[in-house]
Amino acid sequence: MKRLSHTSKTITSMLALLGLACSPLTLAEQSQHQLTLLIKGYEESKGTTYLSLYDDAEHFNKMDGKSVANVQQRINGDTLRITFHDLNAGEYAVSLYHDANNNRELDRNMLGIPSEPYGFSNDAGAFGPAKFNKASFKLEEDKTIVINLR
Image: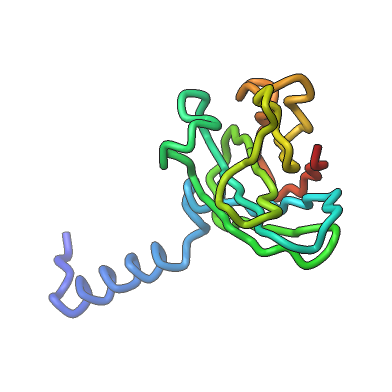
């Protein structure tokens, strides 16, 4: 049996590494997706929208800092577009509110009902705060969802 020379071994190793570097994306890299949110129904072009993206029911809508992402966006029209990049495939839910008077909280009336616009993915929460299972959606490919303010 013929032995490979040191130079041949080096060339073979370099070719193997080059092959790995040029190989298709790994499974984890292939599961990265883009999520675009279109939030509609702003009646006033002032204030700020506070939005959170969640990936589990335990922390959904709790404002405990355990969301996947948080966004604060000033309003300048009747529709707001927010895009998240490089999200893993999975189950997500969105909650948001429009802080029209910029006091950094969702104002409520004497009965505890929000007096500023709010919304959830799947337009959940028509009769109170949405639950994760009602607001959640699967992200398995790039996706655009519409959220209508209440």
